[in-house]
Image (tube, rainbow, N blue to C red):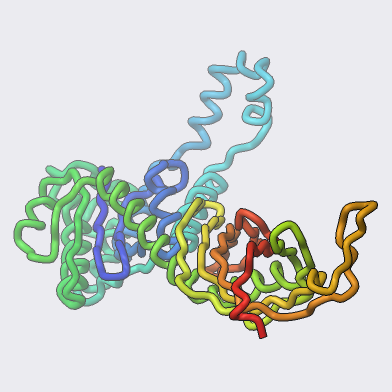
Length: 361
């Protein structure tokens, strides 16, 4: 039976989980990833943590003998190469238990799981008696398994009460995912507990994390605008050409860059790899230093049929251009790095047709 307590708060979605199929099951892997990336937060009670460990030990009790029996009964499989390692290794009960328990501990660590104490709900000695198998509880190693057994409901009652107090204290709605009728009934009795579906929650959490990620990225992009425009200046600096009618000259320098009406949009967003592509467009005003041949003082070569330039004009034009660029970003540990700024303006050079002579100075 799987049980989750999902807490929704302003920053995103938080989850309280109490099942131990946590490493290979897709939904647990996704929950852990969402938590690790900071979109959700996983909490469990100390009762649940102890139950998980107790069930792991119970499930692996006598496993060494079972493996030996299987190996003997199915020894023909020794001839199957992929199973050679299985048959040639010793599988001790302690090693198996330790391996699985360590996986649970890694889940708690990697998922940044917070363990809620149940001390305020139930005396610690009573909890210890339950897990030690002291009277009136079943002997150690005989954990109740059926909901018809009242002792099975004992840890559930403590966990639910612990979580209920936590939700009440934080005034936070808790979305409960469980097939257990008792948990569902409890949701009806508390305004903070709401029964919901796990598959739907994960879908909602993924969508919520995507929107939150996009919102966060857009905010970080705005903070990077000064650095992006600075890199754009370097791209355009000291480059370009211009045309006056059929004549042409050179751009000898640029200065006084100003960007306005800056617009950005996400082209590609790889949340898994932390890669983001952004399209940027903007109005850019810039003072362009130009040099071109003075046609007024030029002479005409009738033989070659072209003008011979004798003097060069050097001046500055105040020019406005519409520019476009593709920005490649990399996100790691909540830090954003500009990987590349690629000019996508129809021409990366300044091409000016019939400039406004009134702006010359």
